[in-house]
Length: 116
Image (tube, rainbow, N blue to C red; front, side, top):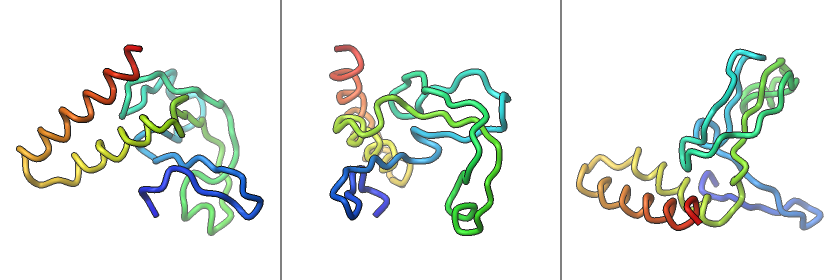
């Protein structure tokens, strides 16, 4: 399920899925001024002094902590979903030559959408 970027809830509403550490980040309140998306380099939108869970364990335990939430504004766009998949695959690939080829594909996706 980690590769899904859009799912539908029971009301057939599309839900965007972000990827912690790639295009969504939780930080201590007011500790960081700006974060750029690790995938596309776009400056993330920030919600300051949010309160809520910051990961799956805090969701299950009901732990709500104050934090700042940074989210890439490109989350949910098809090209960004593809770029996230490539970025994750590059990190998971043990072969340098395979990773280099995937990195070229990633750069092609980014150049096509970031520069236009």
